[in-house]
Image (tube, rainbow, N blue to C red; front, top):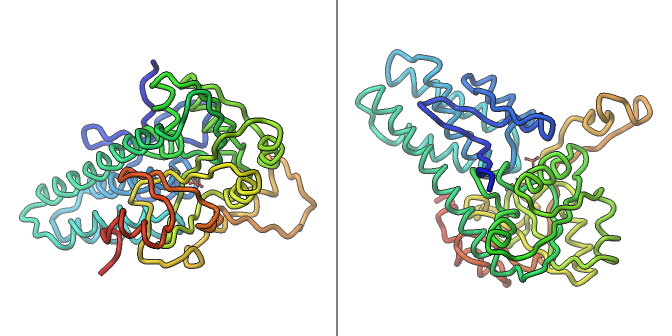
Length: 353
Ligand code: MRU
């Protein structure tokens, strides 16, 4: 078997990430040392996917402050607080980015650090905790999720919620990896996921890399595939899940949920508890990122729409809880009524006091 994909590497206090904008053409790791590099990496989607953004933020804050060579603890704390402010402004939807940044800030601002080295060690420990907890969560999601996958199952997925979007394993793809390792026969349909093609460039690539049978389709083919092929289940990831189960994920997830409901196909959201935001009661409160119109206006650097045309480019949508069969989490599979089962299973850990 090929080694598991790890998009984020932290070795000898150096941070490297797979530059996901280069896939599937090249598998390149790039160093991240400055705030500008970290900000660009997130905004340009060199690193992306909700859990990966959280893990990245933890290590990036440490890499940045080490690179700046502060003279004392208070200078270091200033650099970290400023960098955290900038990082939190990069992308608004995935709650993991805020959850992880706040965990680091809590260590930085609410603990006393006798020396600069103490401070750096404490941050490093918390960043590693986040990485290890999230990776373990993804593996456990796979174990729970695989129990839903029978032998000979066809699964449709959207965007990339695989290893590349996490520390390892993935969320939506983790049950598929584990089912495959358990010897079950699985076949995946991957939506290409316009406009930035995370399905075509990343999901199709990483499943092929793992040797899992995958067929790539355009987003607008999902309905036809559900109608004429046997799609047994849809599994997608999430960027933020409200207390009532409304779920933000990559644009196109909502329409997929409507299609699945029409065709009577179970629709699962796979996510770690860090993606649940129990501070918001429903999906209308989830901020939806709007991206540069050029992502739609151009394809492969060629303009594909009339000059001056009006373009709307929301990067995420919200799937209403009523379209969701269950949530696959590291704490178990959560079934409706979600307004009761989500707070009970995820707990108040993610709720601000
Ligand atoms: O814009 P992206 O590529 O960051 O969007 C990613 C998604 O929507 C994923 O489905 C989600 O973050 C879950 S990743 C495990």
